[in-house]
Length: 173
Image 1 (cartoon, rainbow, N blue to C red):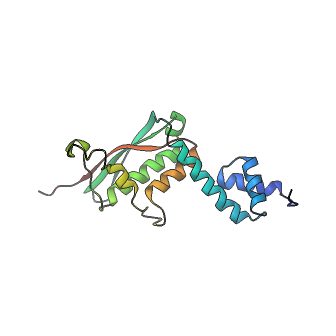
Image 2 (cartoon, one colour):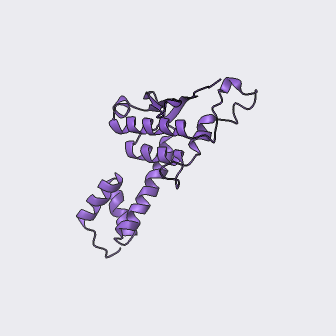
Image 3 (cartoon, rainbow, N blue to C red):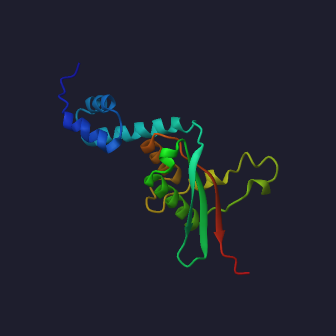
């Protein structure tokens, strides 16, 4: 048994910062010898691992969001799904959808391929949504779009997926 004295304020602080439960915060604080920065790091990693497990759950609710870039020459529609209508109506979920539609509009290093246009056999190999999600976030190049979505899954405690999208660029021909 360790002789570490854990402060209730520290546990509350960790819960507010990470959204993780009381007992887990307490145990991580003990493991990290009361080092709050290390505990936050450990809890964020734990939250991401838990979010990966949520990805197996079905999504039946969601929203469609659009973004048109200034100049009206390019835009995107995105269908973002989640598990409950409670999350689908949450303002942060709408912001996430808008953020992803913005990325779809701006990023040029991938192209939209409709699955019907792919040769037989490649439909299982090439997934345009996975290709899009492997891109770096524009405002934080240290993480991918997929990692950003995982952070949102961790916050909402629900699976979130991009089910489909459409990207349009004005054709001058």
